[in-house]
Image (cartoon, rainbow, N blue to C red; front, side, top):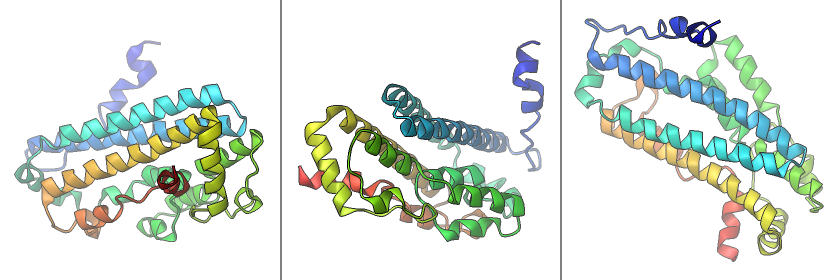
Length: 258
């Protein structure tokens, strides 16, 4: 066993296959960056699974460490946009047609991430109508409890009276605000610093994902303007609609109550 064999470096370096004639210089960058994003998505799914289990076991110490890693990965993902933005609109246009119907909207791992964080909706399945394997995998994630559900169990384990309708909710449905929970969270912030810190890590996670969405939107606008996106999407117009929609609304709503 050596470095190359353990990491499968030879196989990894064969996965960047530009399709444009020449090929166009920036197509290699485009492929590499997006493959790296998919690797980070894979790692985030791995970390979120772990964090979910830690919260359900009431392991506060390790959960904070897990949050730190997840938030650091998100910062790296945001920073990678800087590299993509070195690609000009002309250089992207030189190979864009090679993408044909492919689109970032088809990233199954990112949809899994959204579902794990509570952003579940039937429309997410549309991109996989002709892909039974992807549809099946995403359906499994739609039927799993979210990170926020694990957080509610964590609060219950710490002797907080969580409304039964939240603990027993239909996890296939998106998260929605709860007035009774908001009152409880306000009390936690005022009286329980340790649990309040855990709440703040969820807010950090929510904000970190929003930051990545924002940078992604601006990168798309910078590269293709208001053009239709690849794969028939509305491009930046659609992405803008995803901004400023928090995942954990209760934790944002209570901000105006302090």
